[in-house]
Length: 434
Image (cartoon, rainbow, N blue to C red; front, side, top):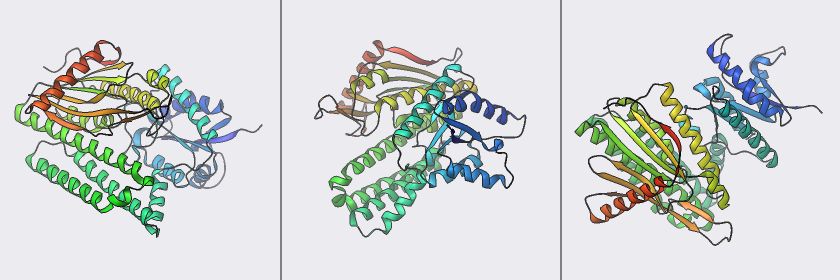
């Protein structure tokens, strides 16, 4: 039986270069063993032995291969061009990425498998995940949703004469605009008054636009077809605004007090929203302020425990989300070690329970709490639905009695969960910055 082709998109580099050596290892030790076990032959562009333009041959394989694996490590422009072609056609693609690297903002929400080519366990884990992903694709033979296909769908929605579809198009367009504004906020981490004023104005503009969007579209968005999407959209925006507030608190404290350390505690199920903050904005702050030691203590739910609960996979597959969280934090630790970032300490613990309350406790001169709620819908017997953050993050500080109450309770919960847990990941610098 003739094997099917799996075309491999990856940075290749010149013969003998470090890029080529790494790419060859990824192909040999991760990609080939995984795809061959599923009945595919792995072919990379440099292995195409046919006359004609190499570009046309590459495009032909991208378009016609039943499976494509794309290694996004190093953010190679050619790789992303070829990935865009595959995305446009809504064809199956598996994305892999070196641990410690982050996806570009435009595709940050897409699924990716992380690997460390220098770690045998990581290699085996990446292979197994690729195999599972291939089997999942084979079991669900349908068009794939991609960032580009979403843009095409958006155009069709805009051109629709249906009021509901037109409303949905306006909502999606507004989300894209908010994402761009948030990305600008994330990049502005320098401690200058002008930048902070600019951030504040942009944040107010986002809030005004969000309120206007709700007023303009609320009636149609109340329909049962769009209520869930509306709720998830507002949940997303609430969390993003919370992290911008958190960032402002940290930067303002640094400028005014010049501290020697800052502490944050995270208690969560899968850190769907807070992990991208840690990987991007927060890490930039750490690298910018090398004279400050940043201590992170994280308690999350054990993904093995989540899998036993057999949760409704809406709004996400919580067990896989939690497992992916551990992979990404390991990637963050690897990145800090590789880049010799010595002013950060990380402790990650897992607990065999889903906390009723979750959030972030920031310790500066006083405590600041961003707290959400873990809600359970038990209407499906034996198949409960977990909605995390449906009540949105609420901000508390110690200036009011209510804030002191919730901060005290959160600290006690955190201490309890941390006491009866398994220490899973740790990054300790022996000589942290004083």
